[in-house]
Length: 180
Image (cartoon, rainbow, N blue to C red; front, side):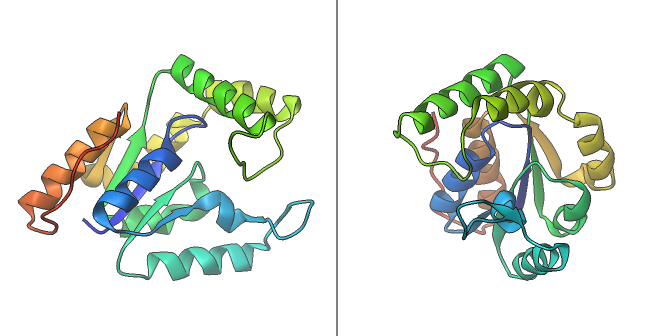
């Protein structure tokens, strides 16, 4: 299990889980937002689609990866090439809490953020992108891969599942679970 695609709404724990899997299984993880956004300037701009798609193709053509992000439509190939698709589904109020917590920590400088934290973005993250997350779209796009997708509520369960699968396949002998 060397290619893992993680998807879920804002605040679902995608980046945290990707980072944990990366550390435990020694697989590089990628954030789709960093493929979409050119962060080299003060004002962030989207990369042209050809650059974005080229970066994604370069990643999925490698032998191992963990890709996380909310994006579904232009990332179809990542679902196709994944050995495992993890759909994170923690309770909506837990996601709200995480979004607000991240907002506060980045606003007071305790955490870094990939984007400017504004009250307008906070509102959009909670209501437009969390409460109105397109789970039907995720289910529809991942339906052809139902045999390799799992629905998980937390990182610990995801790591335990991956550990069990990798041990059964004799792919990796030292996978430990350190998630809370």
